[in-house]
Amino acid sequence: MTWQAQPDAAVPPAWFTEALAAPVSERVASQDGVPVAYRMWGGPSGRCIVLVHGGGAHSRWWDHIAPLLAADRRVIAIDLSGHGDSGRRESYTIDGWAREVLAVVADAGLDSPVVIGHSMGGIVTLRLAAMYGSRIEGAVVIDSPLRDRAPEEHAARRQRTFRQLHAYPTREAILARFRPVPDQPVLGYIAEHVAATSIRQVDGGWIWKWDPAVFSSREVPAGPLARLDCRAALFRAEHGILSAEMSDLIYDRLGRVAPVIEIPVAGHHVMLDQPIALVAALRTLLSDWDHSRPVEAREPPPVG
Image (cartoon, rainbow, N blue to C red):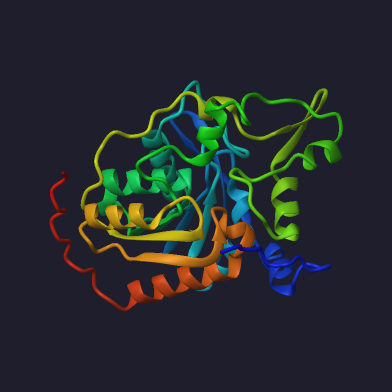
């Protein structure tokens, strides 16, 4: 079946412009001496959502999503180290990024977050749940290759992109190069906003905000999927990178209690092509978690 992204409108819809205009605060936490930037929406509340971006991305990928989840919770979008406006490290690990999420939550004066991660951020989210599940309310993983590297990491290793930071002479030149990895149809007004917040000016021109070392210095966690001490859910994009077979395997290994929710007609970067469907699915899941009790996990079936 051939699929198409939603057609772009000549003018961004009202919900999008209103989301970008929502009040937001910018803060910086610290983890192991490295500054970790984050953005926060919503009024005072003891309840919290943390949004974790994919590799090479940053917190601003969630600018149009976070306000739509902030009716009754504080919503935080983090820049993992090596991304966005956060500091850099000599090397990066999934475990280290997981601890950064907890550091940001503590800096915001909150606890027990629902952590929602996309792509590589989903790997970080699941690792956080495995290490510190009793300290979070739930983990939501969006189209993440949990037993493999994320697509942007594969692209870097094949030297197709993310190899090094190249300075472009003008802002227009670098923005023209913006492409999601893997490439897919997107809503133009969202892509324009994300691209514009993905660059910084330096001597000699404009560069992307990510650190190339992010894609070359870390390894995929070797630990097996196992039962978690928190609730969990898996989201897969219909035309994304997480196959139905892999979803079934992850469901089994997590004790058959993490629902698998498919976003119809979506590519891997769901927030760029099907944002309203993503928000609706997240709201529905969180509402269910608010009014239900966790199901007792079953023992995972033996492998082989």
